[in-house]
Image 1 (spheres, rainbow, N blue to C red):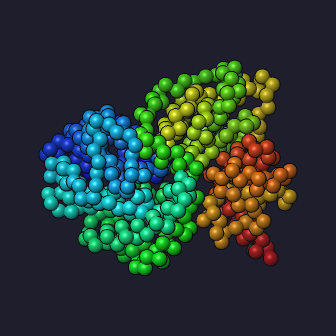
Image 2: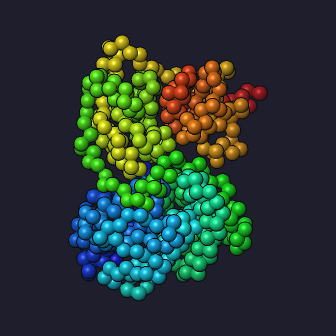
Image 3: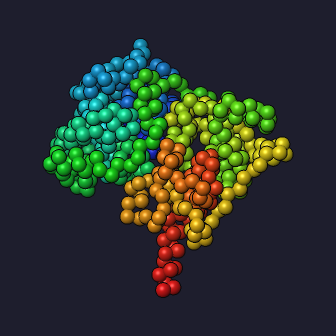
Length: 465
């Protein structure tokens, strides 16, 4: 058996290719939109992708399963569990349903379906057998390393009221069923650390069922009510785009657009015309460059591990986007990352020359004061953009805590007429918050060392006393 694991840092997601060299065939599980990577990996092993499937209707990234099946001529297997309200609504000639107990054969490899509801009602996992011996399980968003999938997303992200507690109870039952499997089997999850699909996901890419049972909180609780209480407590804020992802993956996502088609422009007339149409100016340059000078009203999200998620938080799905990037590679990288969550409306990109053109035309470029925590003026209001779980027991006195992705919808909670000091944990997210606050009309400072810098300041005060 050949097994290849693919890691997408932008959505903290794992996908898999399993192949049988003797049969020359392969199956892909939980594909993202970069379908070329699976085709290339199969070709390198002289395998043909004949089956494509996924564990559930994903909410955190746009699935590539449909496109991959169409590109390769593979059979697309999709869950038929969970009842009529939880079914995929698109069909293709190659589409076949999967139910508990079904199997897919690839030479000597048998992929057995287990219905594991809880994270979502239709969720399935795949037990992988080689020559009749159970090797492991592709557990999707059911079992993670160190955690289990959250059952509240349908209620808290997709506004499907009354689904969280029943989902938690189904998840408990799925965990109990899975616990009877042999401890030696490997666990291959669909997400790793940083994903919002759980609250304490581990950073290693694979585990064993025995290790999870010995160390994971979910396996040590035998009382269903206690499990429900624990799994629903302390879950992180779900990004706003999850609801749209759920919808698009249910009705059938479109193929990913070619990023090579993203044109560069240096025309101020085109820039202004796009802004007149309501386009979002998204500055993806490094934060130091943005803080030094930028166009007033531009949104800033630097290209780093959480780029796609913050685009999903802060840019409306229907909005046209024009990019300001350091170079062509960065612009295309940004467009690629946006495509992972279906944000396909990036229409053009501009280099830094647009700033000079903009300034020569009589427009104002903006700089942002970039200060260490110890240097923040006493009359500034701290805005702490860390997540609510990060702020628990680690507060900055008198700071207003507003999670970065929620700044726009909670704008009325931001003090008016005050200079704002935007801070995060260590300075990565605060420049994004600076851009959001500036777009809302505030006078802003960036706290480059964030909460960690605040702790340093407190330590100095204690030493001086």
